[in-house]
Image (cartoon, rainbow over all chains, first blue to last red; front, side, top):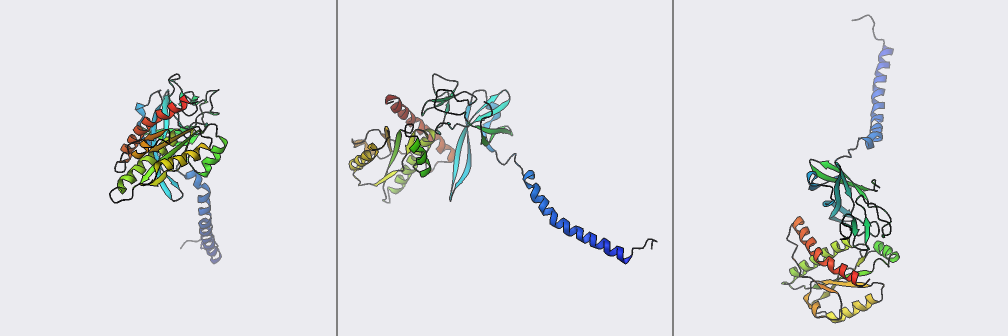
Length: 167
Length: 150
């Protein structure tokens, strides 16, 4: 055996430190895991709904893109279809919500023959610019909301709705 | 807007803008032979009115469907509905139905009669395109009424 023999006192010290260390780690690890969990959550793919519209088909002219997701309303689960007006600005995809900021009707691109390059709300003749900016003098008081949007495998994927960031 | 407490709260403050009521009229046929067709017609009319409401949410109030027995007296029912609605602030009232007997009833104006399409057996995407097609037939009737009387 070697010269530096481990004394009984040292042996007990090492053992207790080791076991204590394991116990402390056992308690701290879950706490640390809970604390950092929100950071580790995956956000990119899950919240986006894939549509059947190819990104290559999107031009600078807004087109309607429908997307469907499941909505649970108390005990009633239903499939909800929503749509978005999607167009390209340069290479950037932009998706606007079709919900009029006045009272919630559905707006159409070019719905008013006199203003073919604006969004038009048929209910009370509200109008919006292409970037969603509401036109003064028409009933809406704010710009159209915007969807988060990205490309997934060549198709348009639509995410959460947020306030318009373009105007 | 739908006929629920949340939308009615909103309606109460926006009566000037929400000036149109939509009343679906549905005949109940509970005989063995007629039940399926009746259910299909009801399904069709309710899907149609829901997408109509989505399009015109800020201008129409969609009332719950009025369902009545086959033998119901249409003209009496029409009178009662008309009276109830005449006491409201609505400027326009549309009645939507698939029941051909309403065509002979003269008490009501603006009865839109639509032939029921059995959408129950269609798959989702086909059904959706059919319903949107139907909606496109109905929309001009609304916008025409609005531009005429406003």
